[in-house]
Length: 306
Ligand SMILES: [Zn+2]
Image 1 (cartoon, protein in one colour):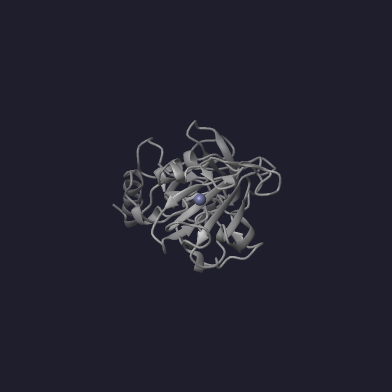
Image 2: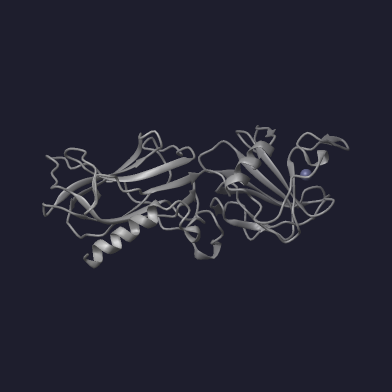
């Protein structure tokens, strides 16, 4: 077996093993120090004349990370090179959802065999809306006949280049529980009702943005303590995080990515014990005419996969 084919086969085995890549699953994990993430790939345009391609196979292909978040630090990406009976090939790279529907396509024209290509998907559909959470797959096809390129030297089985995509991350990175009745949304407080969910967790536990976007507000007052509010990208929802240990390194107006560190669990302000007070506001958002909703069902969902 030629070394390249062996490598490709190894990559295939790797890709087909569920959960085989724990180190690559942290699409939303904290990597704040690394600066802004690389930009997503341009869509490109189909070949305008008559698109043409030889018999295309994939010489190698790799997808990562296995788990990523909308507006997160690491976009789902595909790196691949083709083999072909033709010197120049007009190809298309599709992002497919679980139902087999194409949610976004990228066009690359005059691709040569052995040329390494990279595609980074920003999680938006062709209509520029955030794709829903789910299991997605990249595929490489010839523009001319939509024939799917399979891994060279294997059977007709399509190469699995799939990944999981989420739109929210669980905000507490450590031990936690959702407390009792007094922690719940709507619980009685003197003079008002509790408009968030408390997540009990030791002081100093790292917090991350449940949804990236823009920092709408940072503050410090006697009730909320040190807090910040994030205007979620591509969604009417805002998220608020209260009783932080220290002022967040983020400032109002800063861009923040899904899963980006925003501070630590504390008990500043009117808090009994270390916890995150988390609020989820429906559109148009936090004190912009929206209203808070019960975040617990959402938190539980995010917790299950984060
Ligand atoms: Zn609270």
